[in-house]
Image (cartoon, rainbow over all chains, first blue to last red; front, side, top):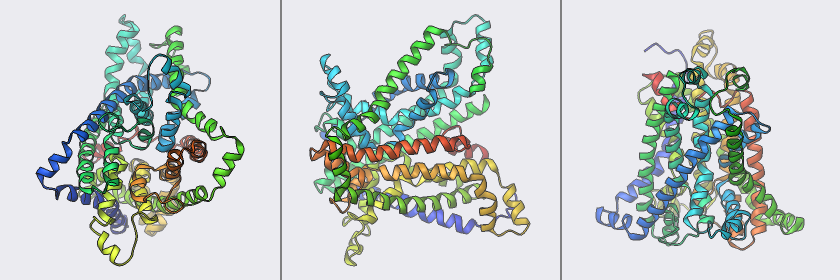
Length: 273
Length: 296
């Protein structure tokens, strides 16, 4: 290691560690401590209660469905934005970030207004017998909205950097467009897609604001885990809130590990290509 | 980007006119449904009861107070997080120390945590059931269900915003310029303000803009710690929920239109800053991996 002549390490590192310690680590440690103080039996009873299990189920299934939709739609959107030029593509490109910039509560009431049975889209869908608002489908749509940018923004730079020579080579070998996409381009995009998918899925699992307005929030059917925690708090059942929150926290750490691993992989591929 | 589009001679795959047009069509329709329509409906619903109701909602003392509280929260949380982001970026990119990679991961944690979990976590620090709650209560200090709690929860959810913009950029720029400046006798602060800051100003502003948008719009974490006291601890997003559940949909959308407007301005600022080169250094998000590779 080379000798460092720059000043400011004690101050900057001191500020950083103090802030991270007080703002990030301390609260999470307090939550973990509270959940751990429950004892294994009580803890297990709370986190495996039928209402909690139903909430995990609807949260995970909706997140999976939303992520699957975003995988296809996000890839198509990134493809259109990098490969094609059409009037207003810059505006569309900028709009992709709207779900990040728009507060979740605002998104929640807007989506509810659109998809309730008398809304613009809800009324059309109702004629086909499809009910979106206050059903798991509504949860899925809210998750799609909030997590869409993750996939677009992780795939876009990889698509931009794709070497046209690869396609030309494949074309000169007589591959059809679909074959080239599937056998040449898709494998190159896969690491970035997986990184985007894990980010999108993780975000969907923890989403709250956008969902609670459109979900209907019926226990056992349309009640997401984050809402169940909130309800336990309102009932002053702090132990149950701590226990269920710790489940979401552990899931978040697991997803963080997966995401970091996926991103490291995605980056290795980007650098190599 | 556009250079790539115009340069190529043989058509690339998926460039057939039929496929191209239909894919653009499908994608644009979905963008219109999923992203554009929510933005439009906010405006439509906000004015559905007429200009008068809109103005009355915005002028109502509770709305005014919610706006003030949201602005106050941003005025505290954003500068504090900016200072933290600069300190973290300086420490992490200008020095080698044990645990640097781990620190990077810890800084990014708030991005992965559900806002509700963040709120609950703060409850167990400052609430009556928490570590410091009883002591604070004995001295009559109120943090939860009061403004400090709202600010703290907002600081948690946005802690990484500035740091994550600065770190990859300052990492890429290296330490040579700063080392030259200090070897010529400049103090640490002078080096930072005269050498480092001009090189990272756009990225810094980019982080600040995104951080501000998130602070002003934070809902989940704040709703746990605020106690939702109307006219006292209601931020603008909480005020929207309150009006909405109060069957004052037009009022809720009127309040939402303010936040939607902030979101639109945020995006315009973001695009403008990206033209200055901000937000471009990373291949999006994998800065942790980036550093890991460089460190090894």
